[in-house]
Image (cartoon, rainbow, N blue to C red):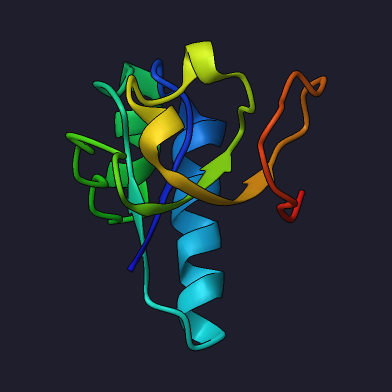
Length: 106
C-alpha cells in the first residue's frame, strides 16, 4: 500500500493532489490511498463537500510505510517520522529542499 499525502497544514491543493494522485496510481494498478496530516480548513471542506468526495483519513505515522509526498518536499512540513518512511516519489511545485539517501522519482 502506498500512502500519499501533502503537508502538515493541509490546504486544498495539498489534499486534492493526494486524492488525484492516489486515484491515478490505483488506475495504474498500484494499491494507493490518500491521507492527510492535519485538520482541513474551511475552503477544503467546502470543495470536498461540493464534489461529494470523502475526507482522506488522518495518517498517524509514516514509519515503515511506502509513501509519496505531494505539494511539499521539506521534512519540516511533512510527517513527524518521515525519515523512517520509504519515500518512493515527490510530486511538488515548490522550490526543492530535499535530500534522500537513494534515487527517487521527482
